[in-house]
Image 1: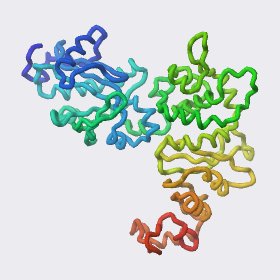
Image 2 (image 1 turned 180 degrees about the horizontal axis):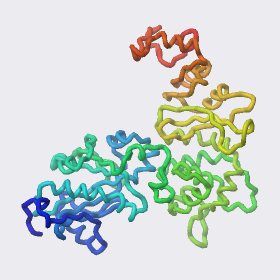
Image 3 (image 1 turned 60 degrees about the vertical axis):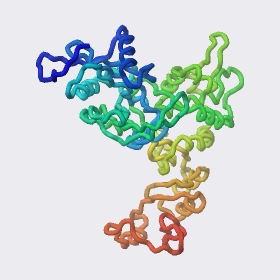
Image 4 (image 1 turned 90 degrees about the vertical axis):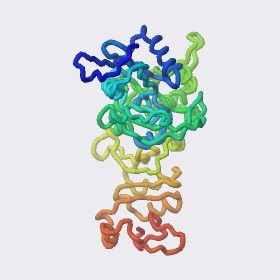
Length: 457
């Protein structure tokens, strides 16, 4: 390599290009990275891309992009996603795991300029190769060796430092070298799109999202479905009920919204995943066979939806760490017109938007008495329950706090005029949170009906 000591960006003839390597260049790229990068090089993890930066058609730098870190607390807190959403969207983050300026090139602003050019095309290249774009880039800088100046100059966002852990195989170990964390959103509203409870079909290239459930979660799902009665006749059954239900549930949680999408999800599973989902094994083809779209449709239409909900209640609750649960009533879409419509009261987690339970509201009653029936089988300890003004009721509040060991956050409107006036008298706009007298030592005074006024709040 020639030595360059001047700044070529002041020279009109200088031409800097950042591009993916072709397959014939890979041995040279791997060799240079292994020889000159302080970490050495063996391979890139998961979905990956290799780039080269050329200055006047000469290689001056190499960049390697790979799958994002599975766990990174500062990053995950900054994005604001829950664990299930993280598993579904992690493939939308690319990690700059290798960046090497080749020996002999000492050019001011070269690294930040290369990064800027690479980021402009990274998402498009990723979609061309892997079938989906990426929304954000991340990197980890060893501050004992580098200051991360090129990332700062390229407007990357610093999120703090890691705890100094690494991963080998499936185990984490402490290497004692914390690294600075930097991220770069590649599109507008990247954080919102990464944390949004509903997947964007444009991010998957028209394909069903990847299944990101652990082995334990799949095993627990199968166990939860074992008690489900099979509505089919014995004759002609080729697939187990628990297999069809498990595939359908995983597909819906991963973004499938119709029978065809569920079937596509099933077809795209690996042999190992189909085995865990209890799919039928065919001796002739030596393969696990997923259920077809007509089979999935017939089975789901014949199942008792209420029993499925009951069996899934505990499993769905184990998937998310949300502490806030909302319940609200809605008319089922397409269920009928006028008085014949089916009305459901559902309990949904705030962040992940996972429906934990739902109950049909009898035509002779309303949402208020159904709320207790809905919440009765749920574990509400340490949870905060939210609802609209209709459910601002003393009995509901007492049930949540005293019987279910939870808390609540209710809205007060004109349907509770006396309570509304009492709250207005507290003058909360001037003092918040309000200072309230503690009736006894250690007593809880927020959201506890034992210490409410005569109206219960």
